[in-house]
Length: 316
Image (cartoon, rainbow, N blue to C red; front, side, top):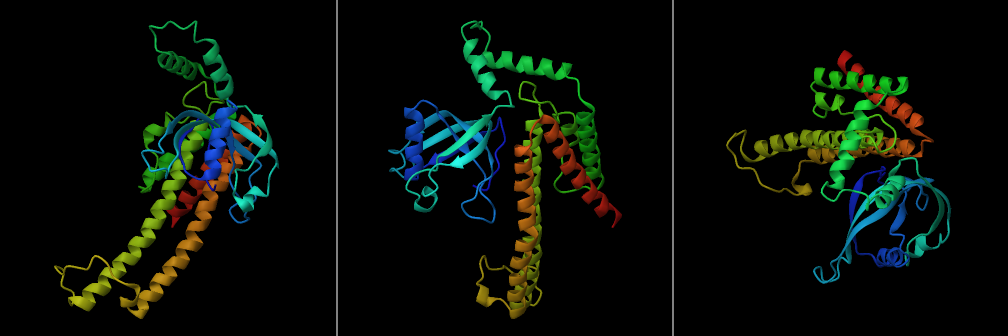
């Protein structure tokens, strides 16, 4: 799909297509309980990113009776690593869609999640049953966060993010980070320390999505205001108390408003598509980065680019 997933995130999927029903049956039968998800190319059909992520199945519910077989499974997953894709083994399935795609790839475990799962399983018997494992894990993460030493590059990223947040508040941006988020902005490698760089990457991804939605709402509001003015003029001679219709057909609009709507649709395509591509491709670049240092550098680049955009806006 067109979504970029990041390590240590959790996702719920509803499984209804026959090919994916087959895939879940297969991963349950072979015991792997995991599969690869890779972003599809935004413009070239049938082409995928070379680096995807590993979805590990954590919980599966059979719901076919409850949904009249419209949905077979509801599944909870956790992203536990990255995967370098080498080859699609059955490319003909992309056209036929009679089964799921199968790939040959290499798991890149630089997140610590797969080791964490193994260590959790190895230490289950030694754990004091009176202490919840989740509490022990959180205490360990908190202690590691307090003791963490940051590299100069990580310090520079933190400073860039802090400067960006202050600028957002100076400009009273509609979509902005809270000042408290500066203290919880993680830059650590792996997932043993929380917050870490991956949690900050997901935070940045959410920010980009909200910016996209906000811009879309601005453009729609602009047209809605013009539509209200038109209806008041046509139906009530400017009467402020006039009750406006809840719906109106395109053909009922004036030629001028019809042109406005057509232009709005063109503007939304031309302005929002680059934002969407920026959001997905920037996340994919981070996912494909060789190591933690490269991800820190990329994150700082994206943070600095946003800060420069707002600085330019401030000077206008």
